[in-house]
Length: 154
Image (cartoon, rainbow, N blue to C red):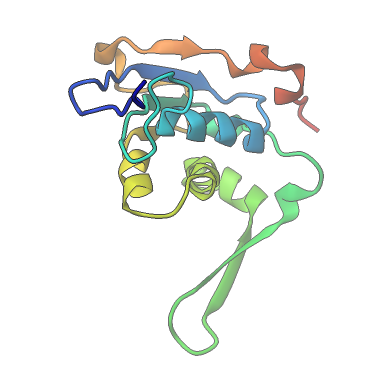
């Protein structure tokens, strides 16, 4: 019995659309990361990009538990005294709320060139519209998977 290893000819990618409205961010990110890597497939091979193309809509309506909305995100401009911060709530209400979901998914993938390539298969949109109707994506209902995946707005 030989161990199966996928080749590029064996890889079959699907398009999946996920509605993030009312879904808890960490649970959503872990499901997306699993889909991007391809771990949901029986033919999973760790060194190949065999995950699906994932489209996330309504990223600005994602929910956070506890006091995570007040959690600061820091970055440095490169100049002396140039440390800056913004809370998660400010990012979600700002110009690019989809970056919260992108960063959460990125941190759930292992670091390296393969993960960076897999991140190119993720498309996140703050609103309900997306330009990928031509790919006829399947809908993945994250809300119905587990009752803990959703949370009412506070």
